Length: 573
Image 1: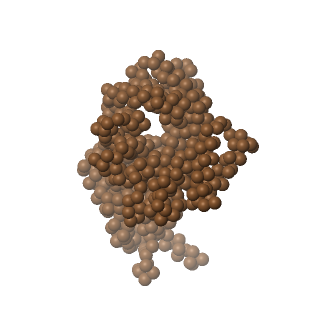
Image 2: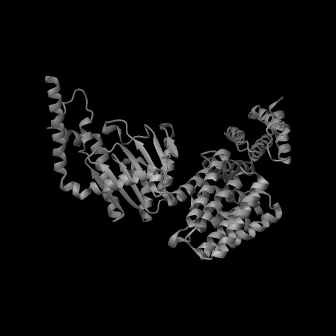
Image 3: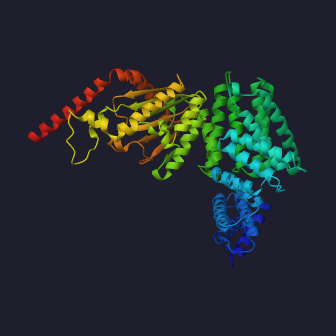
């Protein structure tokens, strides 16, 4: 058969399976259908770039990927989506071929798979194709999808901007798009709910909640209560109403919304299956709400423990059904870390690592750390050898995230190694240079690229930031070697060990070993926080270091003398 025939047959089998019962059978017709579908999909290849039916072929591939996702065959679905994106990019290398609607559908599909960065890029391409005034009906849908993707990436400001643009676009056009309006109203509600403390506008929350309520009821009436979008709307509505009731200390209304969330979860499980994404999200939302409602009273601890267990089950289902790195799984994992940290004693926390980054994943590691810094509103703590990535703007790594954090009032506490620490005796020099001794060790350190191009610029940057953000940033120095960098926020920690003993190879470099990421419900987080607090009490401020810097240099010279004596004794034995 040809690629087109395999594609047509795969779509036909998938559509047939969706019309049948959704409960899998270990053996029998449905099991055979899944095997046959997988075989067809494996033979589907990228269409010929010269095919004159490019729009049709891309649309068929996206449709197949959606069907596979709905059937729970997510790996195959993502494979087809990847192939489709590569094909569309190849075809459009030198000309515009695909309509905005095709790019929009592909972007929404990638977002469903949790690939938010590629989804954002694809949707931006769709938006550029649907220029304002071009009478393209997709523009409102694209803008709404961009808002949803931005929200799930944690870019709350961008999410609100795109949602507002989507509603403006839809209000300016005749007719209505219930799905796009529902998405835009949902994003605006979530943006309003994202505020905390003084930034939380209860009036705005109430207004956006009413608009989302109307959109949800309209969408549910059109789609029916068993549609995934209708269940998602019910869940979001009940969650928002619960939070509003809790904020108003209306216990009776809060309990009614908890009952509504339980009904949503049961309906999702009955209509969509226990491992469907909306079922998992509904269970997670119920668990978080139950935890928040369990405050005070003799049974509060038991109720909170049940909520944690419910969320743990949701996390297990999310990992199995969606994958460990899916955006929804990560969101549930973060919520679970918050609940565990509030209920489990520090000594009972597990030694859990959520992610290990290798040198090949340096960019991904940097993105994760930037997101953690951007989300912090309290204190950022850093222990490192030199801290160049955080203080030097020319490296363009984390400096601007730290700068924005200080602007919003976040504290930044830093512990760095003194340039005269014990590691300085291992500083490498050229083979033809004068041997290092206690008499010239200080001059060697002072002349090194580490001291001139890293330590001094870092200190200069620190003093500049302290002048601009007084009382919000403090740097301390320790006379001992720091053998690995640790970054701690209120929610997560990152640890990168150093292998090399050479100070010159510990700074201005990308990830060269590995880096562990752990959330606050890990014993690694508690241990790291305790270690930081101990070091913070024992280290010197910049002013104290300056007053006693000559003593630090003398200790380094004495250490060098001891090392030289040891060598002489060994050679004389």
